[in-house]
Amino acid sequence: MGKKEKEKDKENKLRIITVNKKAFHNYEVIEKFEAGIVLLGSEIKSIREGKVNLKDSYVEIRNLEAFMLNSHISLYSNASYNNHEPERVRKLLLHKRELLKLDKKIRTKGVAVIPLRMYFNPKGKAKLEIAIAKGKREYEKKQKIKDRDIKRDVERELKRY
Image (cartoon, rainbow, N blue to C red; front, side, top):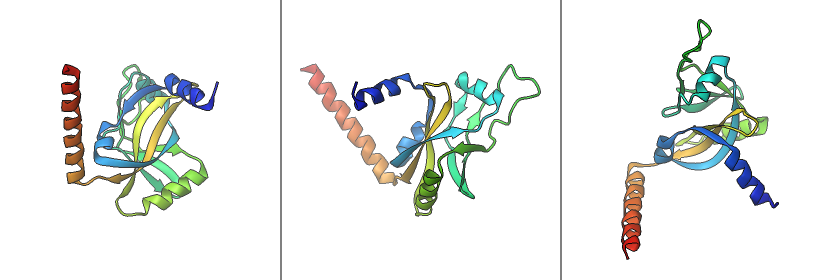
């Protein structure tokens, strides 16, 4: 079994919880990283139910530690008084060299660190795929939509004949 085959098997075993579709529309992804998340018990149970929203969330670096802000994990219905705050700041777990790289890149104007998707790895741990991304301008977004529509029309015509 080759290296590429192993990577495909690994990708197939990931159970994706949520994808930040808005991020792919608003940003151009430069580089991706995998980060662990520090979670409470009621949060992980809510995540297993799929009650997560990464829509407006972003990552901030403070004192060489990464934190995810504005992510929403709904309250777990079966938790009693031990429930969590839905939009609390969550610490991300990254290697020091990755944190240094992120910190260096984030200082560039127009560059942000954003979460792309949350998933369970094959071992059952919740992971977050974050990316260094550059904001797209309005005309770039419109051009991408236009290209996608043209491609769809061409495919439709080719399918017809």
